[in-house]
Image 1 (spheres, rainbow, N blue to C red):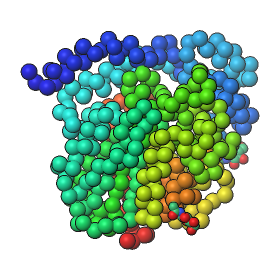
Image 2 (cartoon, rainbow, N blue to C red; image 1 turned 45 degrees about the horizontal axis):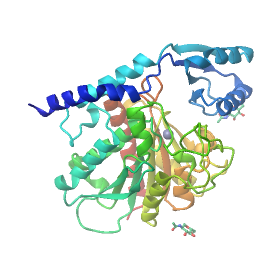
Image 3 (cartoon, rainbow, N blue to C red; image 1 turned 135 degrees about the vertical axis):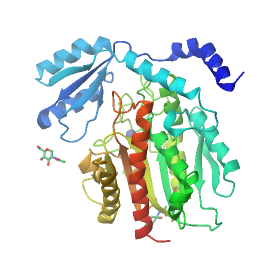
Length: 425
Ligand SMILES: *[C@@H]1O[C@H](CO)[C@@H](O)[C@H](O)[C@H]1NC(C)=O
Ligand SMILES: *[C@@H]1O[C@H](CO)[C@@H](O)[C@H](O)[C@H]1NC(C)=O
Ligand SMILES: [Zn+2]
């Protein structure tokens, strides 16, 4: 019996259990809103605090259109509220369930064809444990060039692993490009992108060796392991960690508001555990944030480029998030972002916006890039918001992966080359 038949059987056996845990989003609706001006945006910001069941997506500054996902029992209230305040709205998705289910089935089917622990990045989305197995398989294939290190554990005791890639010349203490993925659980293109970068540097080394001549690359594909696993097994649109909070109704903290530099501003994070931007009780009270912090600090003095992979929105976001002031060397970081944006527009016509998080997106406090710059003294620190795809922006189909990761690699590669050029070892 082939292993894919075996896994098909295994899948059939576990299917009822899996379906039982799976949040099916039955009759969840998605509305599109057209806020007019600052007052409408302020109202939406207020509702996103007061109504934990209304999941607003795409709230950036001066957004002319955004989405909200809601369970069926909230529909009447939402429609009534929007009508009362004359906020233009229309139904985008009547029932999210069949859409989520068909994506889930597509992904499970595609994976039956893949011989783990090898993974075909373009052919499916992978779970945290599949990604760990893949990372663990690499030292055997590239004994001189990679090292897998476990830096710690998630709250639910998942191993948090980090891959170091070198050109194998044995030289120590090269400057480092540090890339993380999956700080936010539902942003599935993020781990795929991290894996694609790994494969470009390993399997496609011939074309990329100059990127490793004087620099080492350190890649952590999954930071929020529990949240990410939860999006595979339970709730596709989960964002935060899975650690309970002091509110028994609400679970999870936003790792990207939990970092200990200028942590805790109310503009840019929330003290309410029911909000998606909940910052935690104190900086670094999430084990996953501690691990990523430790990875960053491990490379202190060598960290020339910190890049955090998120989705969505086509942005290169620089510090600061917590203030409208600009950091020293802002223009140098802008030049790096500029190199990425130009390379992408030349290759695919894809348009990226870039600048400080505070200006381009919205205020954030306690985010990872501010910490990388403000505490670890990274030379360049950046969050990259990959393009939207799928129904909600976070949920590309498998068939979208190739377009998204190849385009994004053009940008990452150009930015890495620019960092290497500007800051030679
Ligand atoms: C957003 O809109 C406000 C008011 O219309 C304007 O003052 C501000 O400059 C705009 N911000 C951005 C980033 O476009
Ligand atoms: C970053 O730079 C500041 C100022 O020079 C220094 O005090 C601090 O120790 C540096 N941080 C690290 C992690 O080395
Ligand atoms: Zn994100």
